[in-house]
Length: 518
Image 1: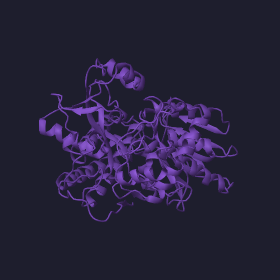
Image 2: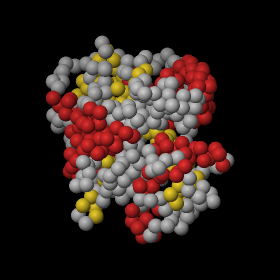
Image 3: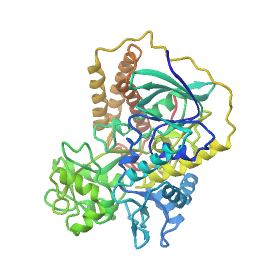
Image 4: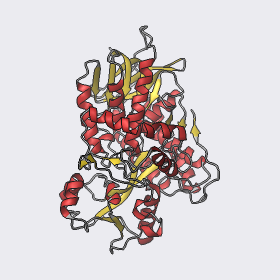
């Protein structure tokens, strides 16, 4: 017998946006948080750099706004950007109230700078900001009696009736049973889709689940061609794409070739502090020109104790692989890092489906445009989580009992060919890396579209034959999101921000959004 759960609010995702929205919701509401693995396993947890905010007398809102708009290459929504930036000091205060202790210097915030910022405005907790935010928000959530966390649950599809959302069908991975989570309001906080690519800095949660479910439900999906590739991930066979924070470059680290020669001066006057799209393409170009498997990041010329104090996590991680960053250069490669597009929402996180919200990386609020400025992502998570929760708090939730049919698994049977899922999973990610990566062209994009369409048909047939599993759900979502990325990329006949097409190398005079609908 299928289990049914009833809550006022269902939050799908347990990253910083999901946890913060739960904490901001009224204590009179019953709230469920679904965590795909354990509650702390999310992109938020692994964010090293920090959170951008106007906290210094030498900075101001307008400067932060203009830096963001410039980095967004004409596609950042100015209203959304102003909304986010002006609420940045309040976001920091909210985190501090929940126990986050930002690194200070002489009783002031120790603020760093990263690509795209013209001022020091990145507040951080050493080089493990996301970990601190995530663990402290989690501790606060555990104190709230009206919040229930369900770990090892993955959502399959949203419950939609008359263009309104009332929860989701969810797989309990502990017993492989599908359960109904029925709710008056649903918040998607599932993160992005970086696992669509072979190499990524993200954990295994980033399979585009929320974007795929929202698309299937009828939501508008915007600007998915803009996948941000982080320029510097540790290149080591056992590192599993460990991220080397942009803060190193903000503090003076240099990108160099194996012979020690720097190269960023050839690509931008800002050199290592150019925006991520420029730095990633520069590294990609140098690797191809010189036949390299990686380039190197050098901060060894700095004081050893200063390095160990400011970057303790990176220092220890690299040392575990035999790399002493105080003496040696760090081998790095670009890897998919952030999904700038997503589910179209307003300032309160509302989608075009009634009762359905989206916040954080899964959403397209408009602040990132064609290229996300570093450390604006955690800020977006906190600001829009709060506005989303406040909007729900102000609404009069219907109290009638909702009923939906249980998931019928009687006509399906267990697959004995799991190798098929694993093979297609790898093929999708390899296709996306080779043909829809940092540098694209029409021929590659159309080949990818054709092959992904074939895989999509294979996956759909498989999906309707066998019992659902975590791997099958993720594969289905990745295939659907990959197809959206490709369609978006094909429709953009220019090069702008993170999307670079060799057949359309120039930027159009007028910026436009690409909107994909089911």
